[in-house]
Amino acid sequence: MSEKETETPIQQDMNQMAENAPQENLNSGTEMSKTQTKQELTSSNTENQQSAEADHPDDFFQQVLGSFKRNEYSEEEIQLRQKEWQRYEGQENETEDRKRVNDFPDYFFAGFWIRLFAYLVDVLCIGAVTGITLDTIYHLGGWSSSGHPFGLYQLLSLAIYLSYFVLLTKFNQGQTIGKMIFGIRVVSFTEAELSWKTVLIRELCMRYVLQFNLFFYLGYLPVIFTKEKQHAGDFFSETSVVTINLIKAFNKQVSADS
Image (cartoon, rainbow, N blue to C red; front, side, top):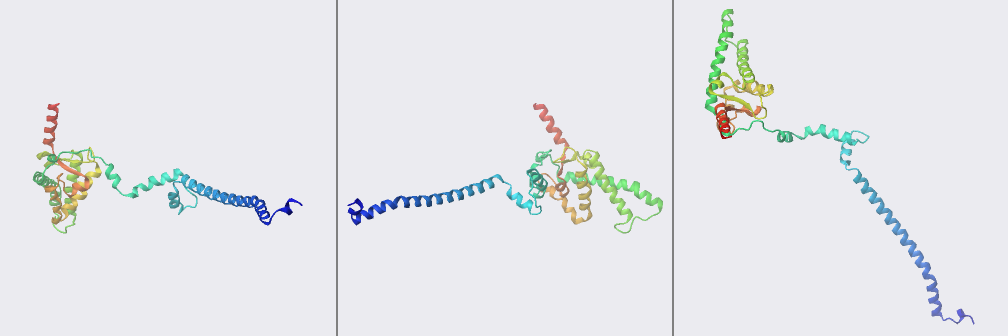
């Protein structure tokens, strides 16, 4: 009898399981290989996507800039747009970057009363100039100087008033006649010398506003209680008024000590 015929049913089942095991292992290995391949492909795609994101750090800028342009901007174009658009972020950076050229101690600034007396002297000087020029011309011409608040005489008087402060402040080192008498001068915190822009803001625009109505004269009162003795015109032009003698005394003391 052959060996297969002598085998018991149990032995035949075991032999059959042994023969089928390699085939099952092969099928299982194939399925595992396919699953592993899929996982590797998925992982590879994820890595490629992450790598693509890492290679394009300016995706946000591309989305913004691409919203109105079909083609993506180059790095140079992005940097150019960033520089152009920085001015719309506000004035904080500009204010922080602006350094003070003149930074005086508090006691160097001229107080309210000395500046008031200097202003009264200036008003007398302006009255004298107006009387010698404008009043003389009107008297010789037989014209009347009274009339509408915005009449020709009033406008010319205003022009003399403002020109006096603008021209002397610009060309006389920040001093009008009244300031020269009391030894004070206008200085800018951000400029070594007063520019036309600063002078026109302080002596033309703000002085016109402050003298336009008696109520606006209150704009001079901050000189009394502000640290750097600034009135409304000083705030807008970043200026103040200092006492020259105190600066001279300070410089002499420094020279003596050195």
